[in-house]
Amino acid sequence: MIAIPVAVTLVLIGMAAIAVLNSLLFPRLGRATRSTGHPKVSILIPARNEAAVIGRTVRSLLAQSYQNFEIIVLDDQSTDDTAEIVRDLGERSSRLRLIKGQPLPAGWLGKNWACHQLAGAAEGEWLIFSDADVTWTPDALAGLVAEMNQTRADLLTVWPTQQTESWGERLTVPLMALVVLGYLPLPLVHHTPWAAFAAANGQCMAFRRRAYELVGGHNAVRGEVLEDVILARRLKAKGLRLRMADGADRVNCRMYPDWPAVRDGYAKNILAGYGGRVSFLLLATVFHWLVFLLPWVWLGLGWLIPDLPAWPLWPLLLVGLGIGIRALTAVVTRQRVLDALLMPASVLLMTRIAFQAIWWQRRYGGPLWKGRVIKQNHAPV
Image 1 (cartoon, helix red, strand yellow):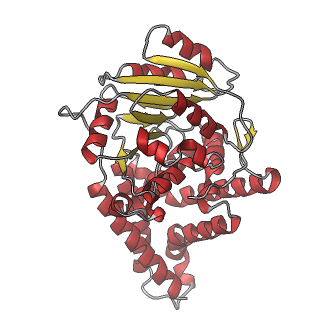
Image 2 (cartoon, one colour; image 1 turned 30 degrees about the vertical axis):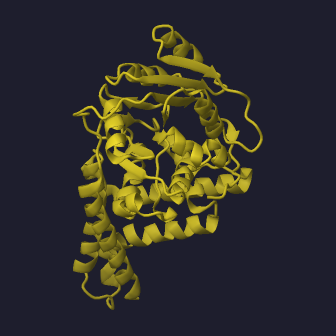
Image 3 (cartoon, one colour; image 1 turned 120 degrees about the horizontal axis):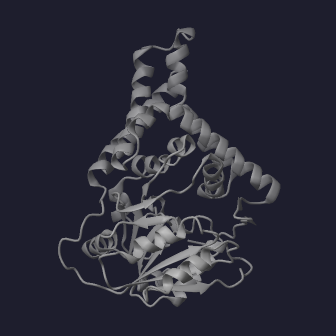
């Protein structure tokens, strides 16, 4: 009986140590303080039914202080006013181009096919793939260019500051930062070739063109839901330089507007994060119940189990560690710190998301997204 609390204690101490290390080391986009070269940059945005956000996104990019860039938006078979909005903005700026997406070929996922077409149309030395709901402050692109030059990154992935409003967003979206900051020691991500320590965020990925081509581009991950992570792994395997940076309120994103969108958006990706294996996802769910829920149950009901020592101090310590890790990652990524007190609710919501993914897999053979069933064809790393 004592083995489980001991294991949970060791796991939480390890996560806390990683989170503290990353909070001190994680780069943050700043202002470009000196000239470090001005390469031609292509900002590439796949857009499918993004009329609600695409105008704000494009206007934020057109207002950049950095001058040597182009914006290309691909209309991926949209049925709303996405194309019309971009076309209207393009009439006012020569930096902006709209291209029409071609029909989806067999074996490709929609976003990967759109990004492949965008890369083919780009003229820049650097390729920045950015989602249609990501907005940029006027100095953000200059800061990204400076960071990429300073680190000599072949791939710089920026983790946008996540904007959350509804309770569903607040309790789930920041967990992405908890995973990155609490599970992945930054020195191992930046300075080792091990694929297990590769991470990337498709919301904002900046490649040097030669590196993008060397890893095979989106053609190499045509059937992958987690194409961002797979590209990062391929890049590390080639001995190229992967770097990460926090958006620091300069690159921002509101991923999903409400709980149903959060549930479906996370359910789209979560199973792929465990290699498409339901058994691994179930094991991960049990792991998170043990680490973040069991201490609360032990604290509340520990008096019923007299053979477990050090109650209530031991479970109280574990509860405090869980809250502390969540709170620290919230501080680093500019989220609401007090939401850390609701970590058990966050775990339960993620459990709901996991079972949504399993249900989709069993019924449809893959997740549902924007009217399409996504069926993966795993590419070798």
